Length: 168
Length: 404
Image (cartoon, rainbow over all chains, first blue to last red; front, side):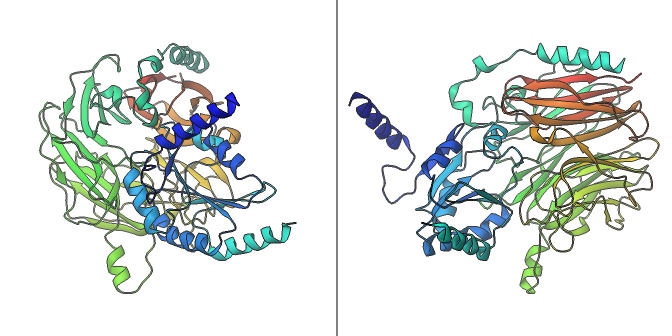
């Protein structure tokens, strides 16, 4: 019971600390730090999840973001996790504006918040050198499909059909 | 001898004091150790030796660009001189860095880019010091164009003129207005006959190159700049290309460094490096994630970039090798790159004494446990040094074995 209470206090404290948590209409941008990647994997385990790495200075990302926004709107059955992976995590406002504009305000949104980006990237994929956009499609069984560069929406649709076929 | 000097360097690097305890908690999310304009707070540091052996650094810290010099191989520095007069939104892209060249009279030319608007459009600014770095002229844009410019590279030609190349998006809007698809950005260039005080009219060297990677710049002799860059080849393939200028005003054909076949619509943020030996050998290093090969590679050319040797892979693929840099010095060529083992970043070095035909085994010459700038090489006289800014341990200048 005591442990539960502590967990609840911790949860409330975390939510309170999240930027924008006071205004329900504003999107929540969670700080992505060491260990966050395991949190993402754990919290979506068993559900088809699209994880997208992007950044406010990335030209191709600007084109792709609204397409992903529409994809998310069309497919409420999958989890969409957006992670802003630009080098410097000081662009909170620009990040929010781009997500809102692309219709991704209600996605699960994170922003790299550790200056040691090499370590963050290494936890996600040791072979990833930071090129964005990058999409990871995580299947129900945990299988990860990596798409380097802009994802083609028909490819995402195909993956989704496969995921539906594996559903028991 | 080489092994001994590398070992000595390793010992030296391990003796560097760790500064974790001095860092305040709120700096954790930043790539810089602190927010002031001082060298200790820099995220990017670029070195250059003056002909008299003085080391000059230009750095980016606290939204300002500053310079300082050292006459004792980086052990102590002069009082810094601030180049910028106000805090700017400096280009913090992973491959952006301030550029510095020093002419034979001690004149210093600088160039760097800033983000000029909220859409992250860049602007290349230049300045020069005619009094040995005591003061710098007011910042001037390198071009009158208001389209985005980033990743400027400066080089000093044999006659003392300054050659500048950068990535520029000015051709994008006109192409789109005509309904043509436009990929990437253009490689543009200009030169300065007055030590970097003013630059010639901007000209196009190659269109549709990758828009987010550093350039490699060297000279194949007097008046012959050579630029290596990530190009966009047919089908959106972002492989590397090289151009040897006929003269500083005349670009020539785009030649391919390798067929990596990296088709990607993305910003790799990971550009190449180039150095040309006194014997005329082109040494190029780069990163790719192509279908043909993935990782860091080195190749050399002995026919001005018409053909390159088979790409030589660098580093351990399970340790995320990044940021390769090559420098051909008077006593051989040196290459450095970073590797990461999950906890610490190590700079690996290897050397060649036969124009890049064979290389020594890689040796770790420095490590750090927090974020770091690209490892760079700089030479003075017969010596080659690693120049490396780290968040935890500050700035380091380490001599690399002379290869004798």
